Image (cartoon, rainbow, N blue to C red):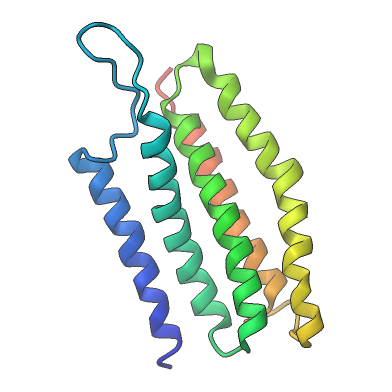
Length: 165
């Protein structure tokens, strides 16, 4: 029971990222200054938000699902889930905030995320098989990985659908 309670820290990180984005230090919109120059720090703020929010939710889901497993499957699956969650968060935020004429950038991130990173990190997660970890069901490395990827794929779809343009 104590191991699964560690997942709560992931929710704290995700909540902190959202709070910082709402208050202003991690402003996710493209900000132009008074001279009209483009904001150069937006990508850095977006990546910090993606790491904090995505990794926080991935940590929570992984710890809730796999906390009773041995170290190697948890470590490898958590690493893969965090990478996919970070990219998924970046794709979702870009899909929501980018203007329509720059939307191709969000499509590129989403295509790399689903076409390249998804299978690569799935193969990396399958290293858990060498530790005799089960694949599917509660605590399975594959079901945990697919849950995190599905969560962020759904978030991307929802944020693109909620666009105001």
